[in-house]
Image 1 (cartoon, helix red, strand yellow):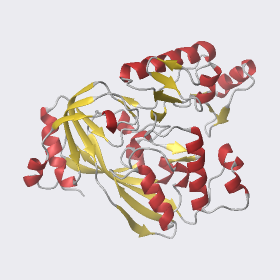
Image 2: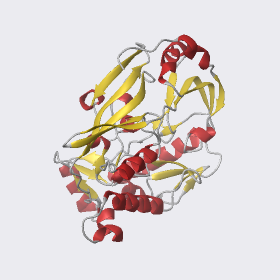
Image 3: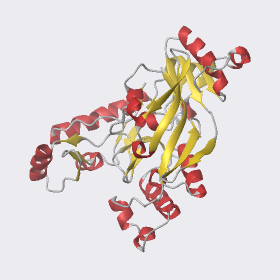
Image 4: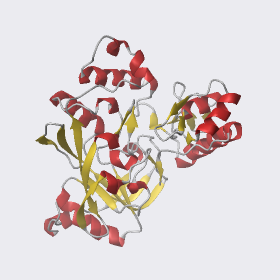
Length: 348
């Protein structure tokens, strides 16, 4: 995919229109786009580049699961809805699988498990799209996307051309990538390729998985891990279709071992995880819970009563409500622990 498609009729298929975004973000924040288009065919990409040149900004929208949207988005909003999943190669060491950027992430994971392309089951039930997954470098239950990532195809909106990007190009780090720090709206992720390991081995180091009855007896199949992860997530996290939320709102802070030891001396119940580089990851949910925020409400926004990492829309909340709550939680945690929490979602 190195050459751009011809513009032709694709230009006429993109007519930006006003769009209510309230149902297109999982927090359910009241929001409206002044100019909105849906991309269903990569042949429309040159038209996006043309429209973006005349717009004040470009917001690329996937499943809307990792965004805090303002009441009004003044620039162009392009929702990625490309579809398709295919096996590219069955190598001795890996299944090489490609998915279009508009595929739902959970649907893609379920398809892979159903086909015997195992390795993504720990990432089941994460909301959002395949194209958004590398942006956030999603991870859960002991598996990070970058561990399964092979490469991706993106459209460079500014240059009007396709680019192929490796893991090094994406500059992955904890819940982070080049896409979160480069020019906003420059990249539209068209498709992503994954190398899923052969032979497959379950990743069961996460405490919740070790305690799960479904996984306790012998070596589980990938489907059993998939089902267990879904059960755990459903027990802990609210369904965005029922209660507006963006999943984990804060990153788990990473601190030096000395800082962790000093905190553990003052707070004996401190939950932390040693990292390969010698640093330690603190459990943000535990920090928030210990500050008394679990289940509390501030205006139209609140903290989930079963998972303190999750901020929820109690009904009619806007970005200002969510961010006021987030700042109050950050201040409380910093005052008590001297640690500054960083939000996971992109604040538009």
